[in-house]
Image 1 (cartoon, rainbow, N blue to C red):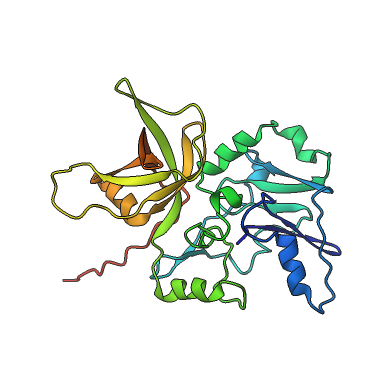
Image 2: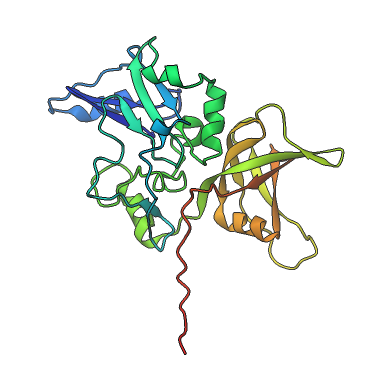
Length: 296
């Protein structure tokens, strides 16, 4: 599975995706397998284009509208776009309105080596700043967060980010995705976390990024309290400057919020003196209250 951005051009489409080598077949090679007799040509344009992200200015958010959501009993969530409006992701060539989360801004496709016109009105920041930008909004991206051959679409928040259509078919993985949507349960989500370490009695954040995929183990706060030990563990994903993204079981997140559990970060079964504290981004959809009300 790849997460991609699709840019429409006059004579075709450009797909932006993470080309980091992995267990998965490269996307270009995968497409070529399925061309068959179709009059479609697939080629790499990596050396022809750069992608920039722009956020923070009025132009980067003036198009935002109040988010509406459709919830399924499984826990899957879809954004509901106003059908009377134009294409939700914008119609300007080479520009995508990044609706994966509120505040993400825009993505700009430019010729290799050139700067977008918006560079004149924005501060130029590092890739690390962009990483922080999406971490605090709970947005996974690329092979580091959406692990090829392992990740499931809804656990990776692709439904919430508007990347799934449960009424289209057919596509590879559709059966499992749609079955989970209608009859299953979404048990995990990628959420932002604060990474803390106990240092002389004071909670501090690590100065360097942690390795990817460290285990995040749920631990009881009160070991004397009766009940089964929590099962399973989460995974640390992209992280920077004391915050990160983590794939966590939702039942464990609920336990942390109630104060019954805490998350310890473990390296190969060994304690690290680090903990992870999850939070829900402000824009995150809130499940509607389905509790029946009684009338008198």
